[in-house]
Each structure stands twice: as structure tokens, then as C-alpha cells.
Length: 501
Image 1 (cartoon, helix red, strand yellow):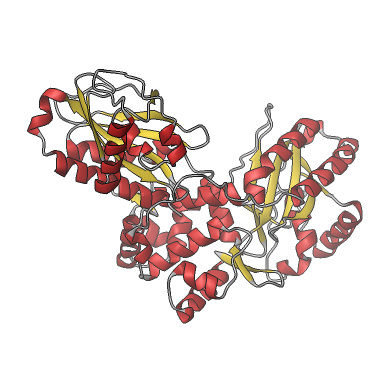
Image 2: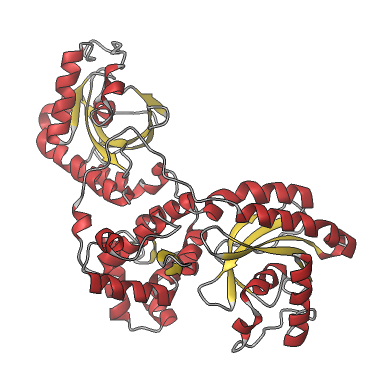
């Protein structure tokens, strides 16, 4: 967890070397190297060409799911954008950190203006200095600072505990707290605390330039911030959207019984259900381990802040450290960005032009988003951004084979080339073959003189797209089509494991 925390929250511009990372977390190089290899194997980390490490795509998928499901991470942006416009200010949502005496920046709306603040989601903030920290401290209690030396950030920072207690008492009556130069010398702020429906203690703050913010202006902004805090406290977790598509096939990743495999599975459970999962049989089933093993895993996760126990139910929910990781990593990147390395590796392995087609289940349309030429001196040119018909061509048929019956039956079967399937029986045979062998092929069905092979990939809710190799038809007989199809199916399964939670 310390290795992951460094990869996520302290990323150097070019990634971590093993020696540097070992020094930061206080472990020997062999131990850190072994941990990194396990993380890379599961794509929680990735290694660059210079043998440096950074957060991997699987970690970004998990963070993206938590972003999409958690009420604050997924929905606060609208509330704080409105507050920013009304206050002419930079707005922050701060949550209690994995260390009780700190908070972290969870959501940020930066104000366009001559004064900008060095604020990065995931960054640690003190509780005794600054409006957001003090508002959070007012709900947590001053005793969390008992063993903490209060740092002075400027001449206005309050380090006297009695004076700090007096300020917090006044904030409790007003419903908000103010700060002028107490954390950032050039900033004035107002903040109000709230509790998320998922149980986390948090605060929302408005920060403005100190030189242009009077005491009267802070008094005007205070009730606006307080109202925004109330609105944030009413946000509900996002329910998963039901999709009329088959779920992703089960993969061998679910059988990973190593300690790191169980840890990854716990991260996935917490990211998928941020409001908590019952700690008994359901959690044991989701982790896929014995009850004593899950109990030990849960104890470690709670001690580190990866997980926390919620309310009277005792459910296990995403903890402050995991939420901080999600804030630092941000929402899941678009698939073309997330899968760049997968496509490059596939193009290098096959020597052919490789493309990614993404399926939008809400519109039931497909678009070829990315094209990577292979090293072969003669390759077929494809246009990124092209809409892809589902009934013609390998990319479309690989997707259509895993859609519901209604969508298959309403395909128009328009002839695009003389080789396009225009009879429903022919299309049905093609789709059955795709499902049986795991990949599709098409000979001049969409583009004359092009031969394509494609394999579908899934994201847990259903079909998400396909990866395709396209070659000029004159070179078709030079290739082992079955072997090429198997390589594509293997690459698609790797993508499915990456995306499935």
C-alpha cells in the first residue's frame, strides 16, 4: 500500500526508479522491486522505457469506478461550479484524510482570475490552518491535534489551541468558518462542514484573493457556502445503470488467490460499492477467500485507511486513503487513452494495422477511435473517428454478436460493398461463428480489398468494443488466420480483465 500510495500521490515527472522509491518508503530495493513486479503483472502499475514506474491502467479503472459511484466525487462538480459563479471564488471540497489530523482535496473548481492557487486533487491539507481545514476540524474535534505540532504557514496562522477552540466554537454557531491568510498568505476563505450520505466528514470552501476580499464580503459568502454544504450532504450514491446486454464472461483473474490478488479484489469491491458492503458472507464471496483470510485483509485495510466501517450496520466502505487515491487519479480516462499500450503491443505482435472500436451502449453505435499502423512495410490505411456499421466488417460483427436479439434483428443490412452480408441467415451464421470461436473475420465487407479480423472486449456491464487487425486482401494468404485470430482474442481478453470490476 505504501508503494501504491507513492505511485499515486507523489508521482515524479518521469516515474519512480526502484532505488528512489525504496528510499522514500523505507524498504530495501529487492522488496520494492518484487512488489512492483506483482503490481505490473496485475496492471496496477506500469513500467516505462526508462525502467521507471507509475500508476497503471487497472488502478485508473478502479479509481474511475469510485469516481463514477461516490456521491461527492461524481456529483459535487455541479454544486461547486454554481457556488464558484455566485462567490467569484475557487471552490474546494475537502474530506478527512487517512491520518486524522489532516484532510485532502477531493474536488476542485478553479476560478479564472489573476490569482491562482497551487491546488491539486489528492493533496494533503492541515486542519488547523485555512477555512476548509478548520471547518472540517469543527466536526471532527480538536482532540485529533493533541499529539500534533501545529505548523505555522504565515504570521496569521493560529497555533494557539485555546484561540483555535474559540474560533471553532464561533463557527459552530454561524455554520461556517472564515480564514484570512492562515494557510495561504494571499488567500481569504469561507468554509462550511457537512457529512456525505456515505458517512465521510467533509467541508466545502470558497477561496478568494485576500487583497480584494473584505470582511463584509466574507459575511456575504458565508451563507452561500453553508447552503452549498447542505446540498452536498444530500447527494446520493450513483446506482449502476442497467444495460440490456450480456455481462462480460468470467475470466481467470477471478481465480487469483495470491495476497495481492485478494487485495486487488478488495479495491474493486470498495470502488464498486462506495456506500458499503456487508462484512460477512457477502464480502467473503466477493473476495473469493476463506473467512479468516478476509478478516485479516479487512483488519489491515481498515488500519491503513483503505477501508472503513460504516455506522451501525458495520458495512465495509471505501476509506479515506482509497478516496484520496481516487481524487488524485481522477475519473477513468477515455478508452483510446487507457488502451494505448495494448494497441501498440498488438500492432507490434501482429505486424499489422490495429484499430480500436468503441461501442456506445446508450446509442447502440460504434466508432473506430484509434488506429495504430504495424511495422509491416505495406499496411492498410484506416480513418480514426469513423462510424462502424455493426452488420458489416469484422469490427462491427465482433460487437453485434454479443448484443441483444432485438438489436441484431433491427440491423438494416444495407449493402456497403458487393461482399456485405445482406441476408439475415448469412449474418446469423457469421455471428454464431464469432461467439463460438471468439473472433470475427470479414473479407471486403466494409472496405473493398481489405481483410479484417476482430475480437470483442467487455467491461463488466456488457460488450464495450472490439480490437481489429486489418490487412490488404492480397496479403491474406500469407497469414495464419487462425493464429492471428487467437492473438486478437487473447489481447481482447486482457482488455476485458482490465476493464471488468
